[in-house]
Length: 111
Length: 117
Image (cartoon, rainbow over all chains, first blue to last red; front, top):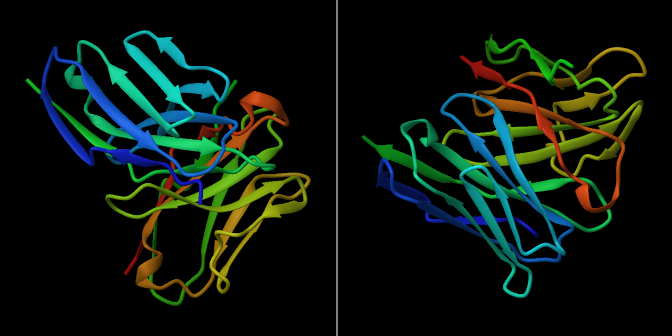
């Protein structure tokens, strides 16, 4: 299975601090994606990083990918209360378009 | 360009009834995916469809569940004779017909929350 697995399962930090979440997977991939899900809502696509990329930025988000270690990290800088959500990594690979989700990291930003 | 649309947003069914969940992909998207999410868990892939074809149904339960994506109209996920364990959020996603490095980038609908009483 190429399922991503996020770490930690849950994270609470003070507003303004940086939040780092990690994702590990098992097989080769075409790309890795991060999604956010607010409680009871749908998923929002945050960022896609291709297998030949090592780092990507989008606003306060920074994603790294290490294919040799089969791992990725999502860094959210200067966290805000609105960042409170669950964050999922998803991998796409092989010959199909199916993506496989991990179980997510629940991030809680404390005021 | 409207996003992926799902309806209904909430659906309550009694055990034994049928549930029909609808998904309209984004304009120009010909690939549709269905996922199920249980409370406190990630999304589990169910089925991947293109127009009039089921491409991958490896995540679909063998019985009671079926999906279609007709030439015209939305994709339908159908659950027959629902049981309490079917209670979950069901998400639909769509993607354009592209391959290559952006393969797999999907756009999600708001989900349908099914409650079986």
